[in-house]
Image (tube, one colour):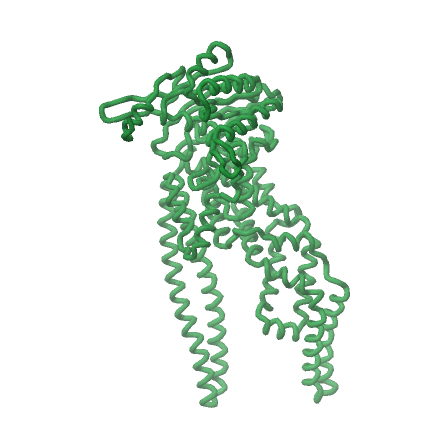
Length: 620
């Protein structure tokens, strides 16, 4: 599968044209609103000054036109906002295809003024909130950060979707998913890849709805909501029933008819005050959830109308109640919230509740919805989160020059799962047009990689790690082919000291390596990635320490890659081990400098360019 840059470039032109059209319409409607409003005022004044009641009727008609224009204009403004977000989404795809992380950042902060908003937008892009310093491979494989897997592939704009995708990157290797379950995910991802328009529509809708925070109030109400009390229902019935006395009063005692209306208003006002203790929890819930309910409803509507056929995708879209779709259930709640919006202004709330027991009705409808559907509502959020994680997993196929679905080894035998065979692997965070791909195969053995500084050793083992992480999400990998087992991934690459914890670089590395060695005793498939083992100590200790580690990791259910410049250690491995493969990188020297081809080759390299590099920077 390959990225289609032209699709997004053409899409960009269409969005620009649509935006121009709707912005023109918005300007015209804004002018007409202004004219109709002041026309209404002018007609009322003229009618009053000229004692011409007919102008009041005309003013009412013009005001009705003003209301209609406001409604239509509001929809046009919503469309403009949506298209602005769709433009950002589309431009983000173009930036991802080009591997332009600076442009991704610029798009994320576009239009923001306040420093805290800009910082929050960058953090959402980078996913730093999900960073786990002591994780098996998080820091080493650039899972989060400015130039990271998360910033490149995350297209989820909801808090729960982002969290699910981050979790799949961090925990996919230990999730317990079977190979068959991962195949099911791959089929879902394949269909998602075939519908980029749907993914963009979904993402722009979530952005326009500002779904950056958890729908906490909605979830809490759904989980704990209950029907209204009997006393509250009785008060509501009284508030409605007393109005039946008004027509009788006008018929039997016309002189008291007006007084009876006033009495009904007063009684309903008293009932409203008395019922606040019953209704307040429901009314407060209504105030905190309209935007998110409306947005989630729109997201489900997009998914339900997109013609998905994949069994997993369809099962995630459908609600638990098979007689109704998720959007139908949400429409019921959204209707109640629209009713609640009528009393959003305190004066309106007073007037409306004096006329009828509106708060009682809202509370009754909210309680019924919570009891009928609330318990299953968290599953709707969970399903959306899973769908969004799958959308993110599809990005490899949509933004990289070359990708394919990995094939997993089918075996319950741990020994058979220590396997990795990748064809034309490339690192997705490197320049897409110039990145060099390599093929690597390890089968219950260890690959030791040698070569000069900057030749590509570390990048290679990161590439193997990244491809394995992406494979475990159920998505595509940047390779023409990959077959691998279900393995835990552990690494020791970016080692830093800590003044606060009084920890040297060597001690920090020892802790990382000891974690890998400890995991080796679990009798579970393991892929390890170790860069320049024990670089922080003297040569003799480094050699003996590395050999000890290799002996402990030489087990049939473990495979891994290790880079090193320790040729004394390499010489001993050729004598004492029969499960080690040797690869190397090389370089070429010319009169003008040094050139790397970044092509992995079999065998051992004993070349060193340290003196040459030192000379280039003026040392030596």
